[in-house]
Length: 516
Length: 80
Image (cartoon, rainbow over all chains, first blue to last red; front, top):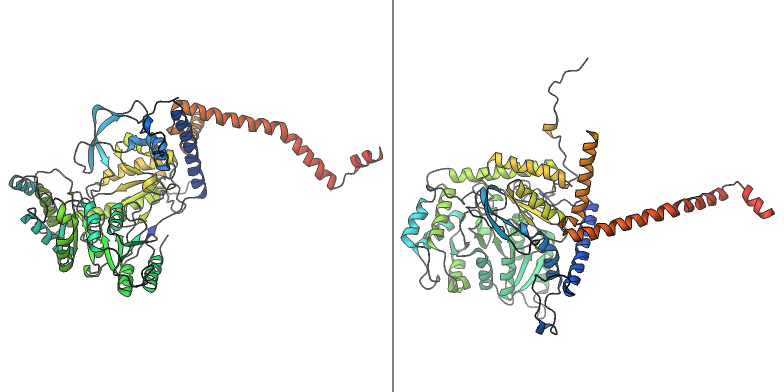
């Protein structure tokens, strides 16, 4: 399903995204499954209320019975009755580095997921398809971490102060210069936590009287930052440029709600790669819109920095655009760099303003030195400053792995969302019963996957999300693909109506001559 | 061999039923309740079908037969 580009000359390469809809019977059966689950949920609630069953969940005390009920809304109902049944697929503790393979602590439950206990056994070498380890920098190789150990011994682990007091180290200055050079901008500032970078800096940039135009599927950190700022928030449909243009035109024509004055600032909040859909933002169109209507652009490259682009510099490079077009470039170091923290980069005036006015700079502890050193070494590796081509090889390997994985999954007939170049691959499961079955059976085959259900996704579109990494070898991907093939046949997950290729292994004929 | 593949197929169908109606997630007593209810409904529907469909079909058949000619039974009853 090719997307016809409306502004044909803006895109230098084809932009192919898939959001295939499943056949109608799938939606009907999903609702049927949820219906049965809801009926049994009511039955169990009834039994709990009348004392026929032990209550394991939070309930009000006796003295609170006459107050407004606390746990009767749909979210709590869903948690008690549906989430608890498949809870063993989340919060699984791991006990090794989250590289391409990891070790899992085995846990069992005696009372249907209300409590867990560890058996003491460790499941070894589970293939990791869930960690955001796009370039494979989550590693424990001694040679690779040499500089990190040196810095650890020099600085220790704690910074014990905020950036504005005594927490700015020379490591931070070095890292900020390196980030600015990597992205091709004037200056950058780093923060200790990726979520807090968004939620604490957006209130510093916009306030009351400003307008925020945010994408439908933005991450919680962006939503929280937007709400904390006190600006007016309007939402446009996911990656839909017509919707965004309409909102921009209305904002400029009608101004603020009652006084009809012009908005002080209009800022567009988008992400580089959306982690639940795997779709890439339509950056060229957004930049042309922002230039036409004089708005600002805030780009959150949490999942795309390091993962897309010819040399790993994110969506700006992927579309061949200049970083001057984006006003605020934000990203995190958690995903592709194997560390923790976030950055905001842009013009020097912007970053100097943030150094004085950001909540994070004033109140939050700054990044600790070994983590900063890990980012420095990963970034130097990516830029080639350490003398090897390892960084470029990693980016290329990630691209190859992504394309191979997506192509094979399409051929097998699964419904996959997202752009062909994004390393985040959501595979649609739809029915609630299949969420639990899928995750458990994949773990039995020694593959760890992340499945996502209702509150994070729409209720009918539950999915399994794979994160391809540069550290995955072809054999690991083939193991995963074969397991998916088997499981797809057993659970009947191959809903796609478009791609059924002739499976080469089935064709056993070795002689092609005519038989007399 | 055919029996085995039929059995496998039936087992696969049963698994699909379990997954679609979320009975895969239920505790054993809930499954018992659910299956009992389903089987009871199914038996009721089948019994109703067995009792009433032949009568309905023969009535419908008579009606159409009456419309398209064959006046014999009709004239007999009128003349009586």
